[in-house]
Image 1: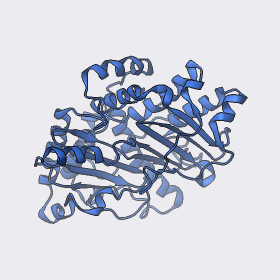
Image 2: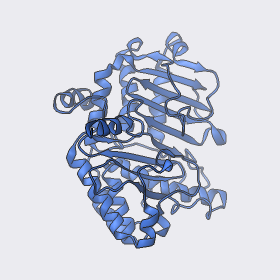
Image 3: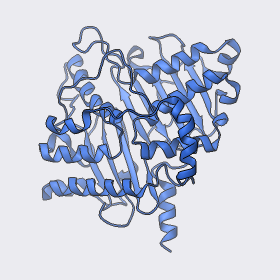
Image 4: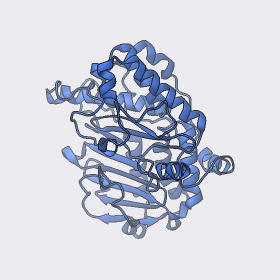
Length: 376
């Protein structure tokens, strides 16, 4: 599903966000995901073994059950006051109210958790993310601390200001949802017992995109592998192909399918993969592999299998802005079952916003519909 990110610097290993360093040891070892070549073959195999309807990215009942147990364990670790903040009604309008700006959020923030509670929270998060994805999430919190140091505003750029919240009771047979979110990180998972789970929108950002030379972690790039792959791809295009791929001379300034606009991109733009050489097609798939590689294999494999089933040739790659590093740029991969956006415009092209959305399963709407139809 994905290879380990190869950024300019290895990710930091300092403790952040209130989690127990000793608890990290069980997650720190890389498990090693399948390569891009494996993706092309394993997704076909997954198609024979997994339900590939449009209902869910992953229908594995064991994973849904494990998430429910992890959520219940975290909830049980909280005191009564914290539980009132942590567990909200399924019908609460905040359930679909994701965002990636620094602000107060529903739930319980890491800074307000004990080490035991934070460890339980990370257990739930690790039920969604792969080893690399978990490392990426923790690195995001560390990058927030770095941003605070660079801007001399540590109280505002607080790695403890990332909150976990549940919508609906994970111990019941009804749908429920959990979200872990803070600045530049938003993980939302909807679980519909008996039907599966859905995990988009999935947002990762990075500010700074590359830590400047003045800092101790100079050169670190949280989302560098995705950007490197896209630059290699656009530079491989000849003039005719590049002309088809570029949809605007200037970057778009941000992702288009942001909060409340998840389904705003109705048509495919750029160049279809059917118009690319084999190596270039592989380059686009590599970008998707990097995103899928942040998720556990039980989730990523069905997502990539559905992508293949919908038709790789239907995928489109689009670029906006400069093809030169250090200047504002934006790229997109869009198909029937996937939308990936990556924008690096702000702060002199050193501030990334990136999202992965499944247009057929935003907030698990298809799962929720199936659940309630099955209840009648």
